[in-house]
Length: 112
Length: 112
DNA sequence: TTGACACATTGATGAACATCAATGTATACT
DNA sequence: AGTATACATTGATGTTCATCAATGTGTCAA
Image 1: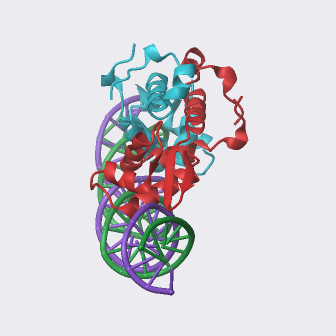
Image 2 (image 1 turned 180 degrees about the vertical axis):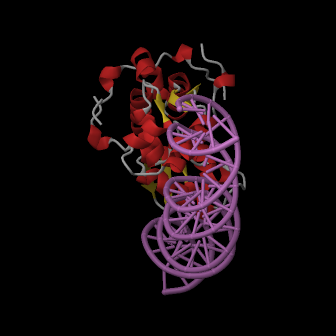
């Protein structure tokens, strides 16, 4: 059962997702831990390291990534629980008649 | 079964949601048809009519609202199908290990 | 401790965007 | 035809934001 205190408001969630580079980073972080250098490499010159760090900070502020430090290297991965919660709440709020057919409503808090 | 041609890419979807006023308008349009004047009234002076028209245009470009004209009045409501599709695809892409427990995967296109 | 490495932070710059007053356009009424 | 209504569009303005070069901070290795 998800509770509100681990949540993120839906505007912040949308803002965190509202950038092409950030979604590309997120796709690379799905189900795997990568450090910053590896992420920069995956982006193949599209952006530089400070830009990646900037986006990682934004994602962290939105609670969409988990962090682990190992020596000098900082590893990131997606916070699937938070993402699934936000997606579920988005659907409940803006597509409630579809949501009731698609998702396990009892697992998502319905309070605003 | 949803198909890709009615879809919206997930960055555009997020950008459409990435504004406080727009989400407030969307909340008012959930499961009900309202014309522009009624939406302006619901916002209680927060923004003016041109701003509401601007946001409605953005939502329409993102395919998140349906439109109907009746005389001089233009009515809007949420496009729940498109919203549910985008939420489902977001979950499949960024929280796949949660999505497989929560949603009817067979109803959502998995192609990129 | 000195040098190299991994990453974060700062400051500057240009682009995207929300907002509104003013105006345009289409519809309805008389 | 003429006026009023409902909404869209335009142009201007201030803000938010993505990006990068330069620099700072912490960690490892010799």
